Length: 64
Image 1 (cartoon, rainbow, N blue to C red):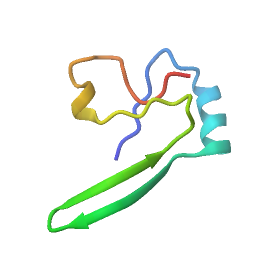
Image 2 (spheres, rainbow, N blue to C red):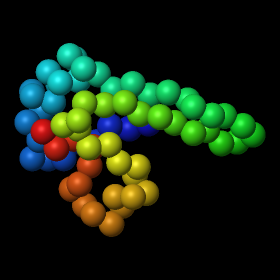
Image 3 (tube, rainbow, N blue to C red):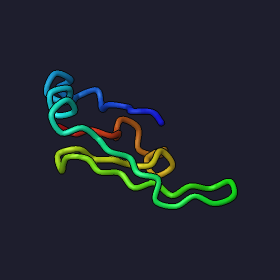
């Protein structure tokens, strides 16, 4: 997993949110060579799969 941050995000504010609220990742299902993940994050953070934002440069995980 990789956390990529939009260049216009206030990184100090993001770090405060992450330290306070964190991001939790759950493996909800695993079989053969696949796993299904559940992600819990503060509402102010946008969590996207890389394949969904490949065609939208500069739009990544956190828009605080």
